[in-house]
Length: 102
Image 1 (cartoon, rainbow, N blue to C red):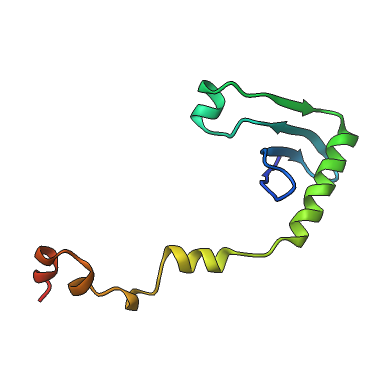
Image 2 (image 1 turned 90 degrees about the vertical axis):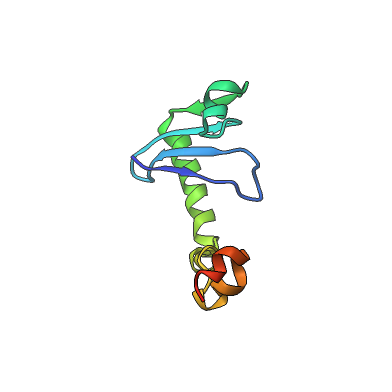
């Protein structure tokens, strides 16, 4: 089973969808994030629905949102891993470390 998580402009709470359009299993809307604090420390509230028709509608809704999404993988990669030509160890590192490269 696959799970989908989204934080779109139309919701500020995580939701988790299990299954797919052909085999919808469950839809969960919750205030809990899947973190240690969200699962064990914080007081959270969630609602899960196991009705396949309800889950199928939720999955269909998510799939429609997904189709409208803008890919960001390349932009994220560029942000996290800038071109190494932008970094100069002699200029960007503290003097003691940079001097070792001279």
